[in-house]
Length: 166
Image (cartoon, rainbow, N blue to C red):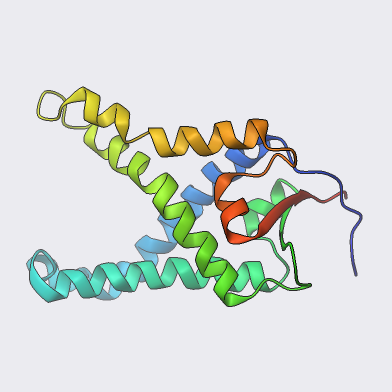
């Protein structure tokens, strides 16, 4: 069954869905980290740490890819009535989903590091912290002036967020 669609959702709605998504991802990452909980100090250095980090990246990538390919919506996207679609094909391909995830990490990842650095005042140059937010703010400004109101990572990946009417 297909729902009627309208133009791109507002930036506020997409940011609210992003915050909701962050909370769900935090819970998911805590749950999938339980098997490693007994290792304690073993994950602090070397290849075990790299393996654990790659495992978490794989879990997050699988989460988004599966939901976007099976209905185009994660739970927060359903709540805020947002759907992700491919521009050129009826169903989002795995490659396009991975490309979107990669672009989003490049654009939003530095801001996440900036937030973490805020917990160490006096030890980190404030100018560096501000610079880490530039890519994220740039993609928001891009969406503000884009004719279809799409974020930069959607443009690069060939995807589009649309509003879904109830």
